[in-house]
Length: 173
Image 1 (cartoon, rainbow, N blue to C red):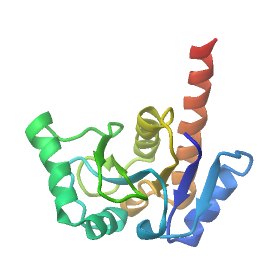
Image 2: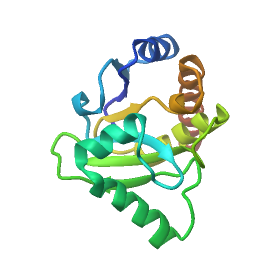
Image 3: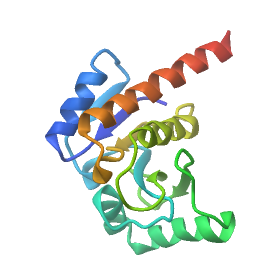
């Protein structure tokens, strides 16, 4: 991994990330939407059923076409035979040279208000899947369409990030 890019159109979300990750050099914050972010791995959140009709999920579906949502849902239901648990991720190849791998990370089982720990679990899943890879990882705001404040979302992302790195250091010892 080269760097983690947190991206969102909401200035307040970007400010919350900047506050939480201010001393971490490998993290960059970009006040942009999905179409403007550039990274090999791009992360979108959503629900456990692969429905992408709001927030960044909708931007992703609009950008790649409804086929990306169909692929996510097909993988969830035809291959897994059950909804995708919060904390698990799926990765899909794309035809986009700047966004060649899409990571789908649900933060909610079904649409509605969620617990901030769902954000932690989703970020932990992204770290498990992507951190050791080669290429930048762009991560959208997690859980903010489902009632999580920008500050809590940023705090849970930071907590998952630092706990993941501590775990990796222990494994290397």
